[in-house]
Image (cartoon, rainbow, N blue to C red; front, side, top):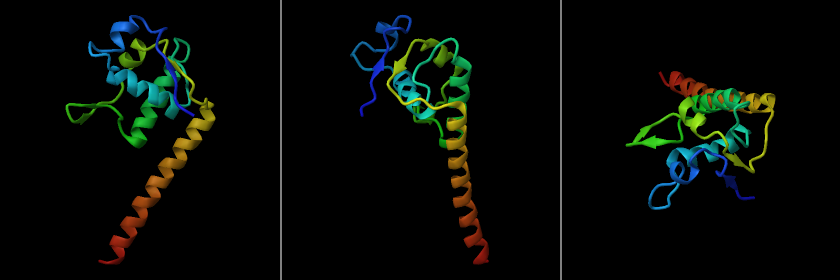
Amino acid sequence: MSLNFNLSQIKDHETFCWNAQGQINPVTQTLIFLTMFTGLNKITPSNFGEFLRRVMLWERVYGALLMDDGWDRPITADDITAHIGLSTNASALTKRQFDAALLRELYSQVEVLVRHATKTAETV
């Protein structure tokens, strides 16, 4: 299933979400994908805090999706505020489901690091 999005409820979406060449704003595009990764398929005033929390946690585990001049550029609270009204058809996750999935990934990453460190220690 494709990820569909609606930007029409974002303030000044015609000029804010698109550049003069008709290309989507990189922050807008990143937030569209983050709706899928966070399990929150819209940004509203009422879910702003939870969306920010999930984005911050997701970026701590996986790293920033957005690049700026070759550097990681985390999503900010201002980025999310400016995109209130964005919605997608991404599948929803409860807070518990999101947290559990992220914790599983964190454990998985740590296990890989521990295995590598153990192999290195055994060769010393």
